[in-house]
Amino acid sequence: MTASDSSAPARAVSRRSLLAGLLGATALTLSGRALAAPPPVTPGAAADAAPAAATAPTGAPFSYDWLVSEARRLAGESYQSGDGALPKVLADLSYDQYRDIRYRGDHALWRDVSPYEVQFFHLGAYYDRPVAVFDVEGGVARPVTYRPADFDLGRNRFAEPLPDDLGFAGVRVHYPLNDPEVLDELLVFLGASYFRALGRGTRYGISSRAVAVDTGLPKGEEFPAFTRLYLERPAERGSPLMVHALLDGPSLTGAYRFAVQPGETTAVDVTARLFFRTDVERLGLAPLTSMFDHGPSDPADHPDYRPRVHDSQGLLLHSGTGEWIWRPLRNPRALALSAFQETAPKGFGLLQRVREFDAYEDLEARYDLRPSLWIEPKGDWGEGAVTLLEIPTPDETHDNIVAFWQPKAPAKAGGEAVLRYVMHWGLAGPQQPLARAVETRLGRGGLPGQQEEAETKRKVVVDFVGGPLPDLPPDADVVPVLEANGIEAGEIVAHPNPVTGGLRVFFDLPVPTEDTTAELRCRLTLDGRPISETWSFQWSSI
Image 1 (cartoon, helix red, strand yellow):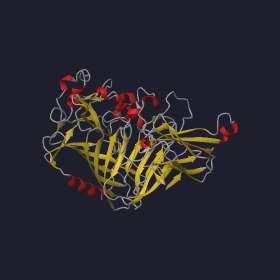
Image 2: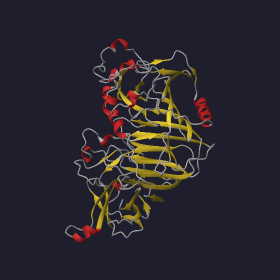
Image 3: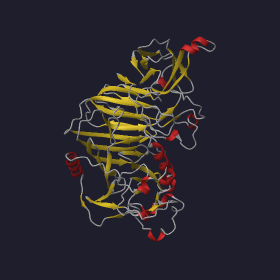
Image 4: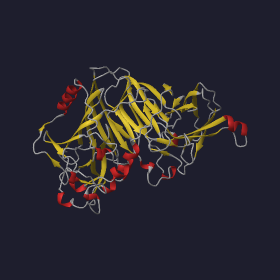
């Protein structure tokens, strides 16, 4: 069951274009083992070069339990934003000026002592909140110190030296993900509580963050931030990378632990403890952020040589009842909210199902290689809703898709929350035994030559593949079932698709008006039992 709301004001997250530019230039910032030549050195900087990132000579005992205690302590104090501390010369950097600042790969933390290496992002422009970084070894945390010599400033020149205690904007972790001789980017923490990871053969796309606070509400969204990152050096090869993070914001604090296991699909096991300073009206847990500009399920209003432009194609939900639900994404004309009411969900995520290059035709962005992200809850998450927000965007430079788990229990001041889940980043989505709705297409209704029907009806085409379909006999009586709540649909038919080995479902719907809001559900059945996931779609003029 879903609930929809299109009355809230539109808001597009504008951090995407800067982050995409930074991650798009990563070939210039990889470790020396991944480059044919080291990064360029600005005049006069060579003498200051050092072999590795610097850590303080002394440290303090560290454990995740201590971090939980620290988050609980901070929740009892007034929030201190730390805004305005960035030097003006850095705050005023343009997009291109900030992109010109690169970390020197041969200065990486853990270089030559671990299969992982850590590089750092400089503060500046959009990234104005420092995060303290600690190197944890043997239960002792030592601060990683900022040194101007660790960065190549490119063409930037500053009249005064930058402060020695400036700090960092974020970190990125490198690992031999695709080739044992090459260090690839694996994981990035940058901006508020945002982070991204890669599976083998993927490019950066979808992102996640620690928590979503009041997303989509008229009063505006709150963005808590990771203020400290504790990087625990793996004891041996093959061990997961442990990242601990302290979260702080006006409404809450939190202690996070990420156990990162790289692979074909990179798994990130997340443990979180939240402490609420104030009531939170809309709390989003395990939030995902992505982009959908256009595709066959929601054609663009403007010409584009690319058939589709999106980081994610749809929302997949594995219900607590066992039902699999697929919701194709849209780029609406007004903010749209859908809430899938659930009890103890088995999983949800934003997936990129279509993997053929010619479905996208983008040589630079390579949307065909953007990872899917699947959330696997641990323990009983109780009652709540998987909430999907689709935000209007004029182009691909804005993140406009948000999905998260919204618990039914209210988040009250003085309260706590405990959460565990595993994130799966990779080309493949979760395994399921049913046929999948891999493509949704919209077009003119009726038959060719019937002009009146072409103007008053729209044709919906859904392609189902996989599951039991390839093994069914030709005379199998597969019945497509359509539920159209609030609208009268035309006849639904299903034809074999010899190209995919699946079934293609067709039906016509009236062209939606401003008053039209209908929930559609379609699935394939055999002998009265579902043999496909449930295709879910919101039919409206937005």
